[in-house]
Image (tube, rainbow, N blue to C red; front, side, top):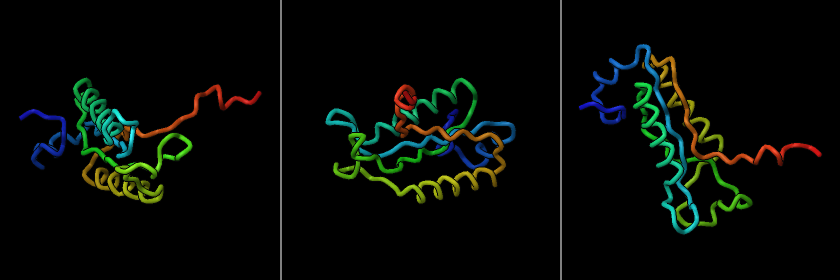
Length: 129
């Protein structure tokens, strides 16, 4: 079976792809997105972008990290909504660090962390007047 998802590979197939390869770690979140979208929309979109990139580049895709840092109520999210499952910043940082250490120990030298849970203010709002 030809797949770019490492979770669907045997360890032998996985190992054979490491040397000179690219690994993508999708990172999303589980939280509300209004009343019309699933809780995993950040993870779903990010994983699909990773799979598309893998098709174009021959990269492999690690299992998606589906929990992210807390959204703030001021951004329209946060813990007020049922189904929002988030991590503290230190927990997310340590979890990501541990995963990257494992991938590096396997021999990966090119790893892309593809974060789909990011709130950025528009550039213009950061300019001083």
